[in-house]
Image (cartoon, rainbow, N blue to C red; front, side, top):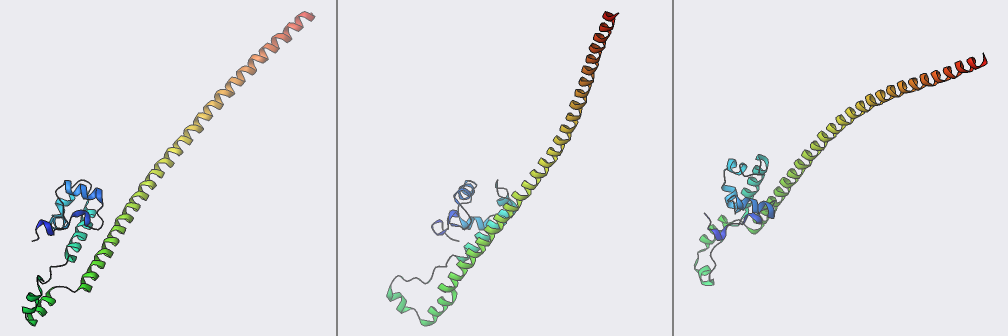
Length: 188
């Protein structure tokens, strides 16, 4: 097990920004190694970390933990190197990965982290699109209801206006009839 000086801070992990790093540290996860070792259920219980995000974070943490270079042979002095036998040196070289292998693993980890980040981004975009679609459906339904109410109100207003016009016509007719009757009386 690594001591604290050799552990990788959580903010150095791909896909973990400053805000997420603060959030994870606030919940007791300060290093990539701690994140890789934490139980999936415990990780999911951290507010704001769902099952999918927990799985992605865990996968990236495990990949980054694997790509950390193992310490090579101790090269304190040139005399120590000369005293090692060639078979011991060959065995040390076999156990530690070459620089190109480490670089390839690092690139693979970067590519996987980028792929996972793209998946998260796509999932967020899909969720946002679904939310917008639901909102548009609700708005369309509200608009249809408002349209029906407006038509009903217009019908009522039109009927009321028609009644008022008929009433006014009746009054006008009554006035005209009264004037005509008055003229007839005067003529007689």
